[in-house]
Image 1: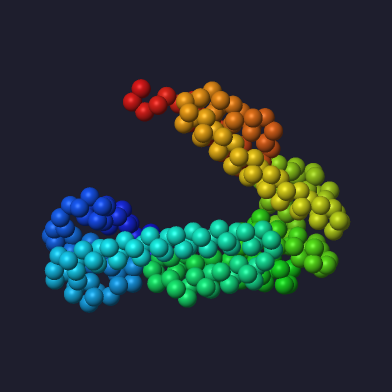
Image 2: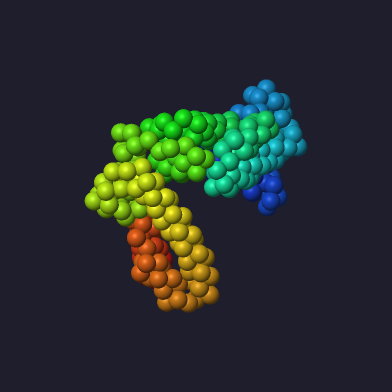
Length: 262
């Protein structure tokens, strides 16, 4: 469904009519846009057709469409942030409940679809936590975090072929060599330590990058381009995680590029 939806035109129409007070003209194109957008936010075709019988009711329909898009987006964003917080704390049950609560009030199909996907992922991670069995359809690093949590709950780590494959896939993303990985996989203790190192490197890299991005943006907006560049240079001086090195390099490249129109 997400590939079929483009809310740019309806947002543009709402801005022009509801914010700039431009007149709503019910042309064939505008009618088609309103009917299509109404369907996408779970307003029935009959209700949309009824609303299009007059300009006031058509304007109210436009307002309702925009409100459902905006409120649904805010709800989903807030729920995702809360889920992330709970996952960090290891509370998968709480994270699942956040999404269940969202689904009790959300009507927009696109947002429901995204919430249901997230709930499926959380349910899968909860299964990994309960059983220790790896799910090939779930995110590698999230499963790694759940397995570490399982160890902290007192469950022994079993070095299965699936676990070896998971660790071998995730270790390079944290700049851990093949030799280090194979040595760690010789014992449960070594594997546990390596899993913790992978997660720790990503947490630190993310935190470091976000702090530097904030400072870089502030300096750039203040006109201190060299100071902004230095923020990313400082990241690159210490960062080993490839993903965050690439991100810092891209930011630095953007700062070194001439401004548009120059």
